[in-house]
Image (tube, rainbow, N blue to C red; front, side, top):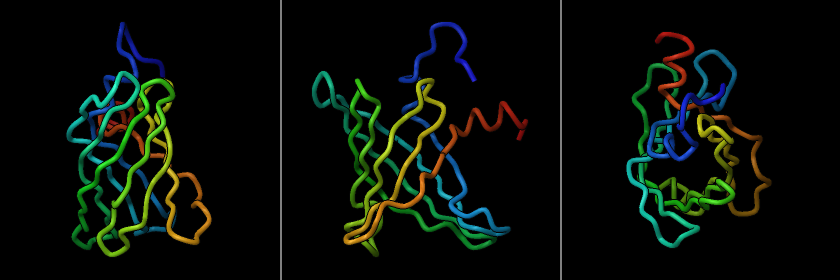
Length: 130
């Protein structure tokens, strides 16, 4: 989905992204709400926000996170995203248009997970009228 006008991928960074971790009915969904972005250098920014894990009708479990964003490559690293597993991290990148955030979960001694594609919440609403 191309962006209209002069809208670049940077426009979508401070947003909420949502996706399904499991394809099963009632599976786990993940939302990342990037609430603040602060420039650290001309190439790097610090991200702060919330990670929400939801399963079926249960209340979501919410964790604060701190991450980094490379402004040239669009690469993202989110660390300490899970209080129950403080060494869990997420590595990935923003798509060229900024509407999709692709992440892989990492834990100590684990292989990276399958890629998880999180879509900008406003884009989902545009596409599906939700």
